[in-house]
Length: 325
Image (cartoon, rainbow, N blue to C red; front, side, top):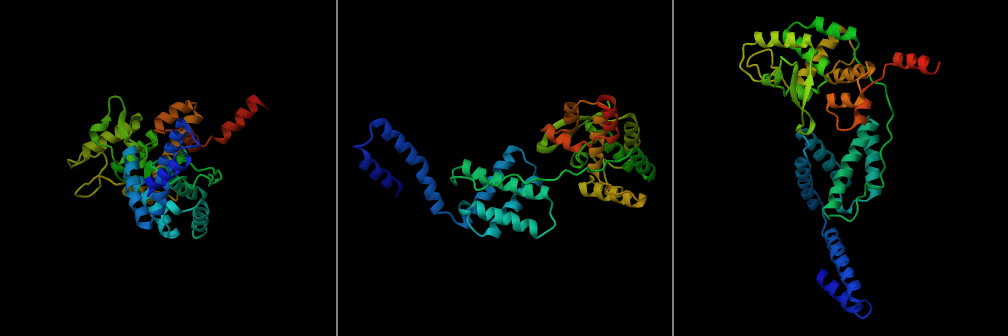
C-alpha cells in the first residue's frame, strides 16, 4: 500500500521535479509514511508489547532491577488509565492523567515529576525507535517542586544511637553508615572481602552497578573487626541477621532496625538515608570541595550533591559577618 502511494506521487511529479529533488522527496516519503502506517495499526496490545522492549533497553543502559520495576508499573498504570494505544495518546490526555494522579492521593510534587520523567523517557524512546512521530510529553514541562530543609543527625543523636546498641552488628552498621555515607542498598551488598582494614576503605557498588571506594574512620574499623570476630557463621556478607541461619541482611532489615532504635530513643525519622545527608552536610561545612563530596557519595550530577547537603545556618551567619557585616 505504501509503495503504491509513493509510486503514484512519483509519477505525478516526475515532470515537475528534477532528479535531485525527486530523490530527496522519495527519501522523505520512505522515512515518514511507514510511521503513519504504524500509527494506523496501533492498538493497546501493541502498546503493551512495546513496554518489555523499552524495559530491555533501560536494562542495557544499566538501570537497576528496582528502577525497572518502577518504570514498568508507572507506564502500565498510565496505559490502563487512559485506555488507549500508546502511539495514539495525546499531550492533553497525559496532562489530565497526571492531574488526576495528583488529586487522587497525597503524593508530593517530586513524585509527580518522577512519573512525568518516566513517561517522557518512554515516549522519547518510542519516538527514537520510529514507533511514533513525536513524543506527547515534549510540551509537558517539569513540575515545580518546593525546596524543604531536610533534617540531619546531630552529634548527640549519633552518640545516643551508638550507646543504645545492644549488639556489635548494629553498632558497626551505624558507624559504617555515619562515616561513609553509603546508600543502604550499597551497605547490604558489601562482602567481608570488600573491606581493606589496613587502608580503612571498602569497595561498594552503587546505582547502575558502578564501583567506587569509600572510606571509614578508626572507630568503625575497630567495631567492624570485633563484630566479624564474634560471628559464628561462614556467610560472605558483611552484615547478616542476628539469628540462625544468619542470612545476608536486607534493606528492609536495616530500615526496621534503625526505626526501632529511633522509637526507643524518641528520635524523629531515623532511617539509613539520613546518615548520607548528614555526612554530606558535615563534609561541606568543614570545607571539603563539593567535587570531592560528589565523588564520595557516588553522584553522577553535582546538582544532586548540592540537594543532599544542608548548609549549616550558623556558618552562613558567620560568613555574613565576615564578608558583609
